[in-house]
Amino acid sequence: MTKLLIYSGNTAEIRLSGLQNADTLAFITGSTITCTLYTPAAVAVTGATNLSMADVAGTPGTYNCFIPGTVTLPEGNYYLTFSGTVPTGDTFSWYQPVEVRVRQ
Image (tube, rainbow, N blue to C red; front, side, top):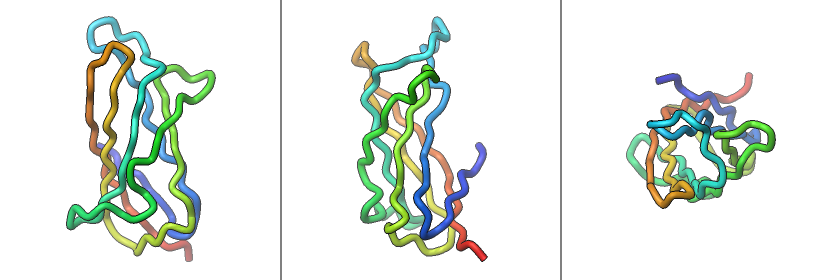
């Protein structure tokens, strides 16, 4: 799994791409999805919890949200969790490793 790179002090766009029906492979739009950023100690990061994700126009199966640059993120490894409900009522969760760096 590829690690997402975020720079501390910058607004970060978080994308969940390729949400598909496992049987038909049709991309899924209209889902309710949230994401939360956690420290390595599994503590939710203040200001980056239960962020609501929106459909990205023109890109079916892709959702995004933003972590504001005002959120305090020391350099290091973190992880995102995604939780969602698709229009049929089925639920899912996903995990994404994250690395936070400070711009030099």
